[in-house]
Length: 513
Image (tube, rainbow, N blue to C red):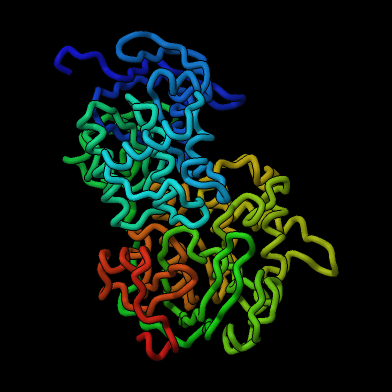
């Protein structure tokens, strides 16, 4: 580009693990001041490649050039010395410490408190970042926490900033603010390597995109002249099927009702549920939006039976008072649930997939008799989940911990959906899965609802909720907004509710519709 060496250039980069080639002969360039997308479905090799660039892994073959010169990036500290910064999807912050203290802990070189404070203030002012350095992290929103990670990187004046799924927990307003910061950085010469499954964001922000499939570069494109569908099809190497919605389907009888549910959050930083009320009917998908950390996990625990309500009548499942029933008893009533956390909560990592299937399907599918597991039936059901939800694994005997995050998500979702529950409560149904798998999961949810199930989808992905849900509410600080039809709700309104501008709290379901 105009005779200037690329900021970053990869040539012939290959990385092997036992039994798999994660990256094969990868080559692409990122120019100075360019916002460049790195796209690919789960298992395409994005994470491995980024770890090589950031010094977490070493390539087996190939060359990395930095400003035109070959470099060996031995570790993340060496990457930061070169000028490579990274903002991870999952933040590494101490809740009980202040913003400034967390930034200090992330420094490679010691800096006096006064000097660090002045530098942080300078960055906050330059990039118009609203953040109080003296506040403790547990009092901050997720968007504010992300700003801490951005400031950490900007203190080193990076030449390349890697952003890994940076908008997955932000409101629409916070996303636009982040984009303004990234565009400002790019205008100052900083290159941005942007990784996201949200293809409309790629179109709005990025100038070029490199697409990986099966560990290899299969395409490079200009996102502004592509469609989200065409980029998704380049990623998966096949036509992307649109979700087929049921036509003229009216919601039926109430299958789950919640009335005036209040529960204390787990100390020290749990969120209290405050007078939550909702109804979800047969054939309905109810979406619940919200920024992470506003009571979503507490709500799922209360609906699934992991946390018990004060009174049995506060939660009813198909006409039965269930507020004082535990998870097993609620499953016998026809409820299934998928928590946000996959490993250790949605599945036991050390158990085989077949054993994990038995844990939740044993009563509804009769996988246990007289205290003994029916191994043949459990294996057959697990094989069905693997087949129907395209789970990449060696078979039912593979441990859950051996699966990639996206494949484990597909397995857990399939395990619950194929039980044909009458009520399904799911948090982050497509967390970490690619466009093709997300469409498959969405179709399965739509089909389940069409069969008469009532579904509650708790998600931070607004696009997902707007395309999937019939009705929508927002949870903020443990309070639920009034439920409204998706067709009558704007993204701007939802974003304001997510940010804490409350509407009326639902007093009774009859008032919400």
